[in-house]
Length: 341
Image (tube, rainbow, N blue to C red; front, side):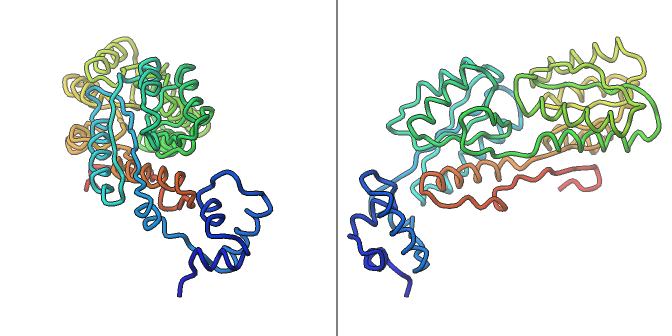
C-alpha cells in the first residue's frame, strides 16, 4: 500500500497539520521539523498526489500567455496552440488566457505585465523583449512569487524561472553550416535579415551564425543585419534594397519571420532565385518555398510542444514538483524539400 500523509506524520513524530504545512511550504514550521518531515518522506518513499490535493482544496491554476500580435504566422500558431493546450488542460483545473502585445515593444509588454490582476494569476508565460521596463515588471512578479516562463526568446538576465524554446545559438550555427555546405567553396556575400535585434533569439541566432561562418567558411562574407520587423512588406523592401546595392550576394539567412516578403522578392528577381536560402519556421509559405526550390532549408520548432511544456513547467513550479528536463527539451528541426511532413 502506498504511504500516506498519516504515515509520514507518525514516522516523523509530528501532527498531520505540520506535514500539510511542510508539503505546502507554509510558514510557521521550524527548520529542524521540516528536515525531520522531509527525512520521513524519503524513508517511506512518499509521493504526494497533487491532483487529489488540488481537488480537495479546490485549487485551480490561471496562466496568462503574452504573445506578440501582428501577421507573424509562427506567433499566430503559438497563440492558437496556447488556447488549445489550455482547453486540453482544463480537466486539470488549468485556465489559459492569451494576451497579445505589439511585437518588439518593451513598453507595451511591461504595461500588460503591470496590469495583471496578481490576485488571480498563478503564472505567466511570455515572449520577452529585452528592455529595462520589462526587466522591472518581471522583477515585481518575482518579488510576489508568481512564476514566469519565457517562450521562444530567452532573457536569462531577467527574473524568470524557466525558458521554453530551442537553443537559438545552436539554430544560428546550424543555419551557417547548412548554407556553407550548400555553397561549397564558392566565395561571396551572405545577406542577413532579422526581425529586430532587440529580441534575444534573433541576437543569438546571428551570433551562432557568425561563429560558424568565421571559423569554417572564411571565404563567405556576412553583410550587416537588416531589420524587417517580422513584417513581410518591410522584409521584402530591405531585401530588395540589399540585392540592388550589393554585388556577389549568393546566400540569405532570414533569422526571423517575414518569409512572405522574401519569397515575393526572390520570385520576381532572376538573380535572387539563385541564392542559397535558409529560413525559420515551417509555415505554409515556407513549405511552398521549399517545394518550389526558393528555400533550401527551414529550421523549425514545435509551437504546440512549447505551449504544453510551459503549462507543465508552471504547474510544477507551483506544486513544488520536479521539472522533467528531457520531456521539456525543445528540439531544433531541419526541413528540406525531401523530408517535408
